[in-house]
Amino acid sequence: MNESASLTHLDLSKMIDHSLLNPTITEEALERGIQLALAYDTGSVCILPYALQRSASLLKGSTVKASTTIGFPHGGHTTIIKLAEAEQALRDGGEELDMVVNISKVLSGDWVYVEQDIRAVVDITHQAGQKVKVIFENCYLNTERKIRLCQICTSLGADWVKTSTGYGTSGSTDEDLKLMRENSAPHIQVKAAGGIRDLDALLRVRALGVSRVGATATAVIMDEFRRRAGLAPIAAPHGTAPAGY
Image 1 (cartoon, one colour):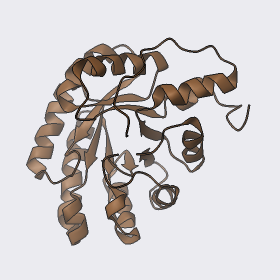
Image 2 (cartoon, one colour):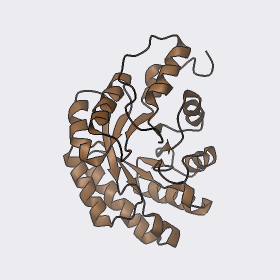
Image 3 (cartoon, one colour):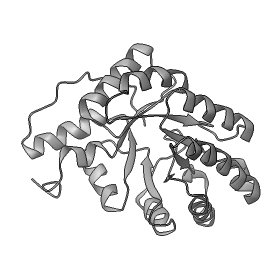
């Protein structure tokens, strides 16, 4: 064993939001993906919004959270539409909502709009007793804007700051994860998305203070952990989602 010797299966599986967001994924693959997440006992299943109600139903009674996206993937929806999406997601059993900031407004420096946009989704979600991850899409932002978003999310009490959608020009980087951890309050968690495809990558970002990752490679990551730990493999449906996240 290496640096993962002291870790348990749940220490790592609960870091994973099993991603079922690729627009080409079939309903059959969505169903298999939910079953895979249950088998590995991940942190959540982050699924296409139309499939959230079904996902929440299948996850009920488990410790895997039902999650979906808001304003995905470009963040340019009006705030009222993001609110409508959040309301629908909460009705459908959503427990964690991953919302994209208005990237255009961030790049334009309209921080009042950006803060009001995030606040609207955070407030309605917290009123329902659920949680929000705020996606920055760092590949388009300079350091100053990333820091400003961390400060806004801290002031609004967002639950996570998240690097990316996984569908931008690049995913998470170690530099961004360090920056986000350093510029967010201790109680604000950090999520890495895009490029976490093996166990070593998961262990690396964990060491940087990341508590969640978005991944399609859940089986690859956890099977390798169990192999290194000398644990029996888990019987689970594989090939559940197109690669890329």
